[in-house]
Amino acid sequence: MSNQTTGEDITEPKQTGESLDTATSTRFHYLDNVRALAMFAGIVFHAALAYSPLMHNLWFTTSSQTSAVLDMFSWFIHLFRMPVFFLISGFFTLMLIQKRGISGLLKNRALRILLPFIVFYPFIMWSYVALIGWGINNLENLSPMLQFFKMMKDVPDTPPPELSTTHLWFLFNLFLFVLTVALMYKLKFFQSKFVSKITSVKFIIIIFPLVLVPALVTQSVPHPAPEKFYPQLWSFGFYGLFFILGSMVFLKQNILNELNRYKKGLLAASIIIYAFFYYSLPDTISIETIMVMMAGNNYNLSYFIKQIPLAMAEAYIAVYMTLYCLLIGKQFLNKHNKAFKLISDSSYWVYIIHMPVLLMVQFLMTDIEINIWLQFVISISVTFIIGMSTYFAFIRWSPIGWLLNGRKKKTV
Amino acid sequence: MNASIIKQLILKDWYFNRLPLLLFTIIAVLSLGLFSINAKSTFYIGLVLIISLVVTVGALLIFSSVVNERKNQTLAFIMSLPLSFLDYTKAKIISNLSVFLVFWSILVTGILLIIYYSSHLPNGLIPISVIIMGELLVSYVLVLAVALIKESETWTIVVMGITNVGISLFMFLVAGLSDIGPYIEGPIALWNSTAISIVIVELILAISLIGIIFYLQSRKKDYL
Image (tube, rainbow over all chains, first blue to last red; front, top):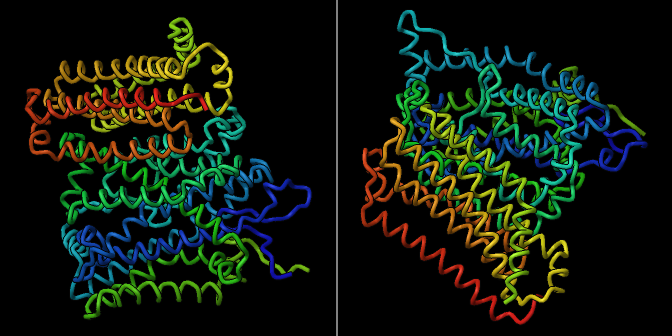
């Protein structure tokens, strides 16, 4: 037998115990693999932001070259990569509750999610500050965002920017969702007839996307990351509901087989809606626009009339593509594969460190004239290689690796 | 035509949907309350809830009284009644449309009254509100038609998915029309030819769809 995980991944509990029922003792390879791909899609998305016309004024590392193709592709990924992640997390959370009970779940999640957040956050925050500071002082071609930071730095009495959870927001939110689901389980929500009744194809395809719209409609389009240092209601109304849906799917796993017949339709609908969605986005978003949106409670009806359909489009794409990813993953990735296992094991670490690495790589290319696609490939490849190599060289068998993925030992 | 049994079937559908409908009506009234508050987020959420409720009630009615009736073998019992297929269709259309129209009318009336009497919402919103609610009505009748004619849960879900997605596209297209969009924030409800034409087309579509249901159902020889 090969090496077996005896600890836990970010969302998945260890697989032990012959007495456990089938649902909690089955290894869901496709969920491991899809989750790992969703994590890596994050690197692709963040790398593409440097070449996004839409984000040109708002991202740290903007190239002088932009690509509409890359932009179109990356915003499509943005709409479902984290919903996929949260749905799978919700699935494994309920699995863990059934295996270890609520106290076992909370202990495990505190160790695997909260502790890494507390440990890594200062380093990540410091690296952002250091990299941005370095960029402002050393780069010739500053992005509009860095120019803005430079200007603010020179203005005396400028209030410090609001503290953000950075790209580690997913850990912060994940832990909040775990607490919420634990409470709901305690209150017997998941054991209720209501949950059993609504976990149906009809509900998931027709009603569930609509349930997400109130949260999305309160946010700018495309929706931002809920990276504030306090629970954001809209995050619960969007990502949190995917998490709960994942828990519901765990209780009724046959639902994925029932959804399978709609697979092609889900993809087709998503692409059609996305064409409309992308067409409706502005060419670019200015810092002033964002500041106006953040400042006021005075609404503009023309803006809102466009906001609702866009929020609906985001919701449908998020739900349909998340389901499509799960179904396609179940069809093609539901097997143990060594390469995928390695990628899956390293994905947590790689995701945590990818942003500082990516920013560094893209800063280094800022003043050099390289083809945009080559820049894009280099930034992803170097980030991926650094992430993977540091994982295998320093993390996998170290206490940090145990913290992230659980302790691994050889079994006979 | 067996009027007595048709009436019983209509009352049955009303009876079995009474509790969810009561619940949804309460939520609808609360949504109208949110819609009327002069704040960006409550206004957004109120309107989104209203649209979602219309879709949800439509889905509930069609699934509970048409799709599930076939799926749960209730139809087998109905087949034993002295009732033609056309009578059955009449009962289903009347029960579905009557419940839906009551709910839909409450919301349309509420929206129009709130827009008309509130100081923060311009009357220019009235035409687009009617047009959007009209689209929801047409979508509902279309899904009802598919559920009755195709008698398939899969088809019903697919068409319902398409119509739901279509709501967002429709809203965006209508708001982008040069005869509609610029007048949304105006102080008066401008019923120009474009706005009136869209509402008339919606009405014709809804009525035509009902006609198509009857025509196609009348060609069916039996329930199976």
